[in-house]
Amino acid sequence: MKRLVFCFDGTWNRLSADTPTNVVLLAASIQRASPKGVTQVIHYDEGVGTGRLEKLSGGMFGQGLVQNIREAYRFLIFNYEVGDEIYAFGFSRGAFSARVFLGFIRHAGILSRKHAARIDEAMAHYRQRLSGLDPEGQKVMRFRAEYARNICVDLAEDAWRTANIAGYVQGSSPLLQIKYLGVWDTVGAMGLPAVLPGSKWLNRKHEFLDTTLTDMVLSARHAVALDERRKLFPITLWDNIDALNRTRQFDSEDPKAPYQQKWFPGTHGGVGGGGDIRGLSDGALAWIVQGAKAAGLEMDIGPDSRMGGLFPDWTQSIDNMSKPKKSLMSALAADRAGPTALWEVSPSARRRWRAPAAALGEGLYRPGSLAKLTDALQSEADESPDLLPPQGAEFREHTVVAGDTLSKIARREYGDAALYTRIFAANRDKIDDPDEIFVGQVIRIPPPLPKDAA
Image (cartoon, rainbow, N blue to C red; front, side, top):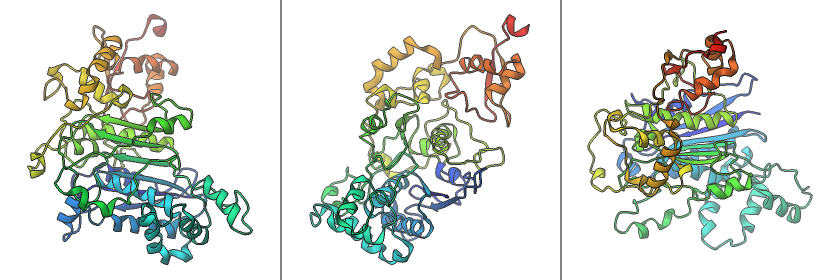
């Protein structure tokens, strides 16, 4: 068994950029093998619009996206073996690509290597799925049974093969499952942005692309930008998070729910990275990485890794560039619709909303995208003020170094690792998970209680 990791970068984003996106940082920090010897193989895609000739067409209209997916699928065919685990990541249109890629796999299956020449035929079946030419899916079922026979995409296919393929034994082809999907601010689609005149008619040829999240993906996270206002960067949300979590007996409010979509402070790049200001994008990166690690992906986040300087800071600028580039895209602007439930708002956004004006460069944080939740946010702030710095207590400061954990610090400070909860409680404004702290982070150490000192 090995792990195949597909990383799709955003529009105009290159591997060689001086200020890498979260996709680059993540891809460069995936270990080549786990401590148990499981190989982890990475396919990195620079995204649409990176070629000299396609810079405009790829950036504005997404041209090249289907070809990028085709190349990723070809890599999958030649590297996949039954039992391998698949992970996918993406930012911006790369997030769209990652989602379309998994949707394509769900429709085409994974061709056997000896049938790799039938990629275009698989693409044709995918394109025709909405045409009405195969209303019951019989043609694509037979195609997969003949050329992608090693796996079934779902239980319905297993049942179909049992009923229609001579000699097929039910359950003999394992179900295809994707271990994890992590995406930052999925933008738009192919063709013209919907805000432009005539876009609906011109974009009809791209309607076959499928970004739906299904339970074929075992866990998934989507970090969405609260402060992106450009209409030419329309967000493509998942609309079935609650339903998917219920199938796994989880409430979507549960921080351990397998399917999560949360809104983070920051513009498009402020969430997905690619600028010289990384405080907010590091927070969204850490959240996606946390989900990937929980799904089994082995990451190197040590001091010498590409993510060695990971340092989330919810107080930093909502834009990730100290010198933002001027663009005609900013002329068409409007607030995003935003989240509709409090559990969809990330802890970093809640902290920023509660923070006094003096703590932030732009003053009080009141993005229009949070307008629907103003009362809920205020009520939460009144009832549970623990997301802001504690008042009226004296603490000693400690700068986190490599190898630190809250338990180790508690053992050193109090002689009892179990007292890490005291340190966690004193730092709820900066620590979301007691098992996750970052090198360089300054945390408060409460003074020992009399019994601790004894």
